[in-house]
Length: 387
Image (cartoon, rainbow, N blue to C red; front, side, top):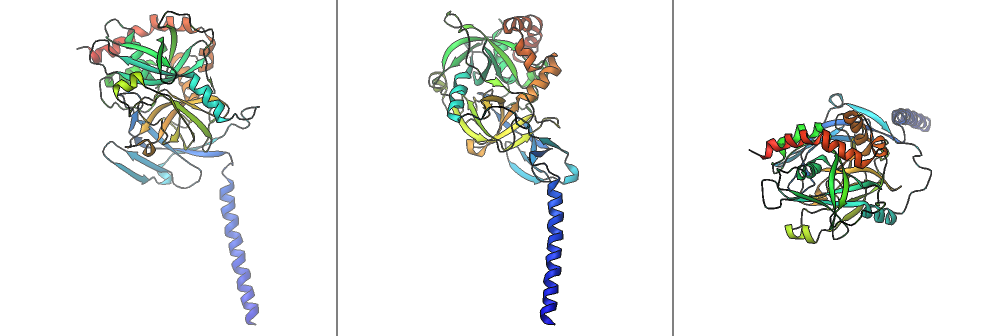
């Protein structure tokens, strides 16, 4: 009888185990194999990626489980971590774009060459002095006619350089080391960003969330008077949402300058690229994927604002906007605004998404912006720097 009882106990135990496994499997089956959850967390201070400029981003943490969403709050003085209760966090499920391309991915050696060719350094320096700091930042050519995508917190300096009242000179530089080649003109800068952040232009470490932090610059002319090339090297943007997903390999390209001295930035600034993976999907206002986190790469430093995040199909899917604080790049978390956010916000602000904007004439659009919008925006900025 003893063996029979023991056998019965084993059977009951096995049955309980199978029931538990079935319940666990049923819960996990509710998560799509190519989907993830995005939820809103607390704000995070981040260091901006242009010289003497800092921004912050509101972080949204991505999790692939149905457990509590972990939020992280950082400030310049301290860093703390806390877990958010499930009922206090809002979340939504996002899915990967299925079969996004008909061609296989490219080697990152090829993508690296294309990204470096399309990358520009944006350098703005006072001619004789003044209240504005010099800035060095990055941008990506996204159209063969010379349209550069960068951040609003970078392009505001280019806009001010177009004003006679401001002692500032801006130039676009290319290559490694970066050499001055072109004169930039602002093609589009969101009024919403300028109105919200003009007050920060003289601050040593201004803050922001990444919201509206994008701009278009047109390569207007060469600095030495030679004709512009008939076609610029460029990266094709992909503005579909969730075209980049957690775990996807990407290449990050920029002109980091934080650890260089002033003279080295002028004469010895080199582009830098890193292959990394997407760590998190983030949102500014939710429930859309507005930012992506790519971790602590060499580009997580000043000078990288406006640099590109490129996927394995050689498509630009984000531009660098913020990085969390840390003594070294390895301790930081670099974030990029998604092209899907930029396109949607551009539509909301101007009436044209990114695709429709690039179908227009860049020279005509730059002329219209200079005539219709630039005077007001320059005036908003001038109130902060001229007393």
